[in-house]
Image (cartoon, rainbow, N blue to C red):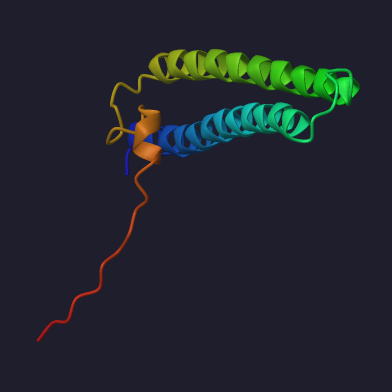
Length: 115
């Protein structure tokens, strides 16, 4: 295997981890937003004042902001890793792994009867 092929495999390994991390940050942001929504709905459902648990809601907003900042940082990491890939002379898309959507389809192996 040539050195450039090894670089491509290493880059693909890094890309897979990048996409998993991006998906995890997005997932955490979505879950945190849903939690905030549920907290607001719960306050209304139990018919308590808006000041009830306001400190918790403030902390939740801070957590969502931190997750949003993490997402922005991951976008920058993605861009910089793409630039690094090009500087290394890796020009292939590596079977669509440059697209985070490729992550959503899990790889499965089907067994079939032969003979």
